[in-house]
Length: 115
Length: 130
Image (cartoon, rainbow over all chains, first blue to last red; front, top):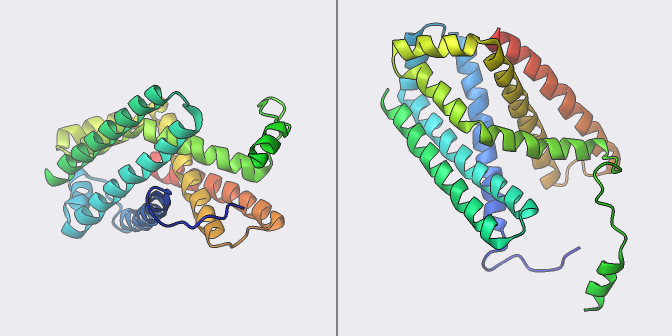
């Protein structure tokens, strides 16, 4: 048992909460998407495109993607912290992970706002 | 300092070939593995998502690619990764609020996570991929 007061800077509490908050957003979105796909049964291109072109769906899909990339950042960062000990290599991996996820966020935005 | 020297004397076994992980431990490492796998496949998934939505032609390409047996197997694997990560994640949310932390229920909920995630993978795999 570690007895320390979890206040102040950089105890990881913010990331811990963010990981869980983004997880809940993604879980709720997954259920909504599955229900929508189950209800509409989008078999054609028009129906599939129409599903994501809908304003509300576009908004929550965007929220899902942002949650996904933030969640992935925390999880992948934890993996690097657990297994990669040399500071230099770890730093490079952290930076590459951030760049990749930022790129994906831009890509996902582009996919959605072309609709 | 006293605490540090005690810690150093503790016996350690980090030999992966002799460690027998209990079920919650297997669930835990698979939670990490499935998360890492999903992360590594994000470019593929985003590309598939883009193809499915961009134009009627790219949609046709998407359907053709997704119909390939090898792609189907990869997508089925990713579907399992998603379902396992999802179910194990919900279990962790309950553990966070101190529910199901005793040994017996931790083992039971691990079994439930494996059963539900594999069942979901089969059901969704049949519905979406075949």
